[in-house]
Image (cartoon, rainbow, N blue to C red; front, top):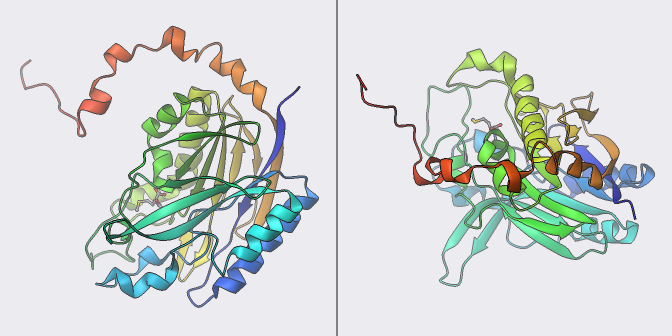
Length: 315
Ligand code: CDT
């Protein structure tokens, strides 16, 4: 039996600060209906798909922004989307801000993806690991990127799951820039990696990188796909949002590293591709046959240290 599945990237344009959750869900539903027309079985929405990218504003007490978070998923705002997707037989990954109270009553804020199967069952959650930006107010910036104020790193690591007739993994935005993300997923057999992102085109710490934003976005995801023999679905929330322009250019990438489909607008736009999961083996079974060719005995530094340690001078 060929393992073919149609995947969709449900790119979103900007979400205004005063846009209600109901209005946003209407847009997500619209993408879902387009997905149905294109035969999509797995629809991937962006990072933080329910709200404007609120880390661009700093409020001293993050609880002031609790209205941007969801304590449960689905909840009263999103249940209609979950119900409709189940009715249509479409699975999806939805990015949202999660507010979680643990068994000891401690609140945690995560940047989360929830993955839902075609029958409406929840496959898993993934909580973003690499939290970029800064934790304190930085007045010199044109706008804030205070993700480290609003989110803590996910405690569960990078997982993969048997779903959608294959092996699926997730990552969120800044995670995509780190080769470790893809490798840890690849080592768990990932065949399809789902990645949502919000990437401002202006990078305050080094504006010389601005013009390369689109290049870097595709560079890392294409490399991650190729080096691990996996498909990557990269989905933006882009366009001009509350005065800040963010990258669009959502893509579906093959294990060859080639882009199969790419969004052309800065708005809500669905792209899709019918992919052959067995094609992953073309790479996983040859050049990137991990079992045969990897040399983990020489990779110890990857997990034993965080920063670079050059050799001493004169050595
Ligand atoms: N959302 C997110 O992780 N964005 C970052 C922006 C760059 S760091 C300020 C990214 O890696 O695209």
